[in-house]
Image 1 (cartoon, helix red, strand yellow):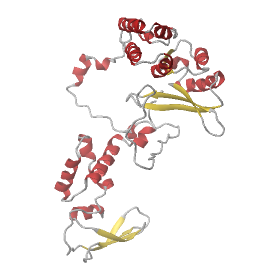
Image 2 (cartoon, rainbow, N blue to C red):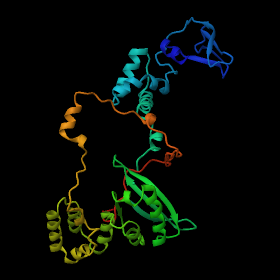
Image 3 (tube, one colour):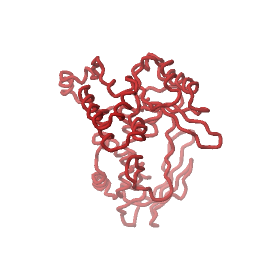
Image 4 (spheres, rainbow, N blue to C red):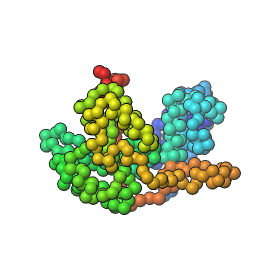
Length: 350
């Protein structure tokens, strides 16, 4: 009925619509009428009666042109051109069905088609390949702390890995949390490929040394600077510290640290007191590792050019797992107009 209404440009009205029968008439009040019934013991519908005569005028905007129906018809178009413009979708609907749709309806239809090709956000959240360590206070009646491990996926997005509510930020609580995290990540051998970044939490250092000896560890530079500026404030010191942090080779780091020492000797001594394995200079390793796969070499890329490779579709073709699905967090919108100004850092002018 939906397809008939859109192809013929008519608005229809369902008089009866249940699991056994459907009775439809023209919304404008002309003599057009249709009656369908479901056959017994079959999943088949039969057209019992049809008065296929319209005396009303054709409608350009039919209410039956819903985004769900239109999205299914746009599947092949979106598969060939995922970045198709909204105006092109509206023109396609006009040329193919002689019907008009609003920009918002065309946008929703494109979203439906993209979800069919690539998979929806909610379904993809189930299979995110996700891995940092932090804790924060619970300000409720019972107190306590939340320990969290978060990481970055290949799209450079921050995603949660594990959360735990504990009585306090102690060595025992961090040891218990890290044991469970190590098991989830595949054991100590698998954790050697990760770099753990954290600020100076209590009890975390001995727990890391006990459970993950030799694993790469780093301090979060933002937390380091927040502690640094309390003792040594100033814009010049901030710039020099961040320049040293962002240095890509050892000589540049030494040059920035010498410049910082000329400005403030005490600030220089404060930074060099940080254990070497957590400091910035430790990023300059003595052994080079090739992180580029063989398929990214020029020879292999040239070999792929004669063949056309279509992009992989969504998770519909992925293997199923026996584990329960992870639900995406609920979408929440606070009341009132959203604020435009961001929360400024402590060293910025209010």
